[in-house]
Length: 613
Image 1 (cartoon, rainbow, N blue to C red):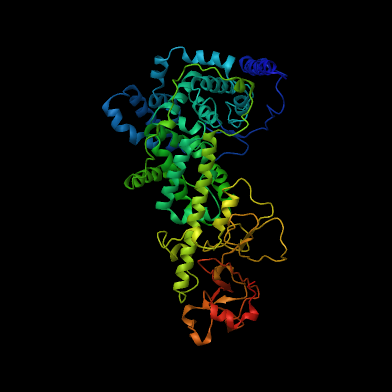
Image 2: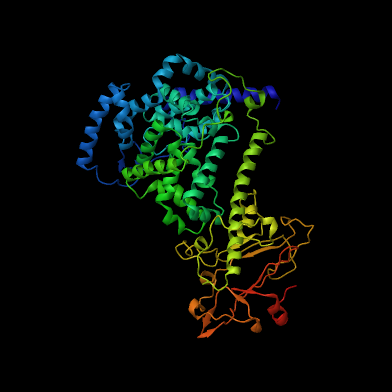
């Protein structure tokens, strides 16, 4: 098919999609595909925000709460009438944190976003952009697809081609021409969908324009190519976790959980579909008042409130499911309590000078004039995808990989530091937890300086790269029935990644020549994380440190990381022993046998017991 035919086909498709939205549901009887408009079962209740539930809702709001909201409505009506006065400005912060009455959100949000000024300064601009979109928008197909699945459990968007679905389609298409740098990006449908629950079509358009272009919110940087603002906010989020919740940060790193895996909708759509909608609205109220600081503080607050539960989840999928799905259904705290904690978090971050990631750099702000039509190129008109990633997209991908590798390296350094500490203080009790045994600022050793291969090193393959080798194996031998695993004092089990073929019937650590890259595919990489309290056989029991007897050099006994008793006998070796040695030019990795670091003299005197080939 030649270029002219492709352009004609794209134009016909755009016109056909627009016509269906213009005709509306009433004029499309028999023309809506069943998969687009599935039949809904009989529902019991619709909540006060318009969301439909297929299960009975809790009892109606208590009378005292209704009376409180009615009193608040009276105060808010007076504030709306006197919006620009100094008295209103003094009360605004306190009353917004208490909550905007739902019936008055349309007025308050419009005031906070200065929608009326935007409309009066740009008369006719929205209709102009909508007309241009019908002729030129290259995002119509994707917008149509996203509108069809956005908020389908809400009464406004339940029916295909309903009034609000048509408005959502129009707003997104018009904005794709108004801001030619962004066009349309998935996630914007969630923003516009919430705005349309409280505003008419044109007001929602201008509110969306303010959220993206005003420096107070600057969401433009979230949706442009490369997502530079997302990268910046994820880095700031990691700084907050490292400062205030280092144990949780290490817990995430241990399972290769990058913040991007659980926080996309936190930053992209301000917690829509990640917390209950009533709480989401309260966060939006504050966000429209105070701007970007609220997003970083709310992300911190969610993890702070649920830290104990998350620390018990020893699997990446379980953690992500808990944060993304379970908290959306049941956050576990009353909205007022969460907002109180959010305000405290903002104060806490402000004292640490971590409340604000900083002013948006120039690359996150619009460079082209808004509302000026730019004709798309032929490839965009046809809908042809670029064969290669752009430089910006490559950089964005590299940033994600770099963040994951950095987290993996930090975890590796912590483990090496822990190993050094244990080796130097071998007489200490073996049950000391990793989090408490060394400081995050303790001795550091880079991955290049040691031959120790850790789970963090393996995460470079599984998380930082697109795909891990097909034969990679990750077994966890200490996961409890409820999926929470051990107490988090160490990584359980063994992780192996190796080349597709090997002549050994059992895993064995083999040295690689100095010229070979440690990342090479022909290197067998084995890591065994050993914690005597969590990884020991069930029939062996740790002995109290008081019963520990220091051996003299004459006995040539191993340096102990933990002794066990079996049938009342000390120092009985485990029947499930793993012995590993990985030589290095600079360092010999200690040989570990049943929790004991074996010294060289002991190896020489018991050469028949250890195969170090």
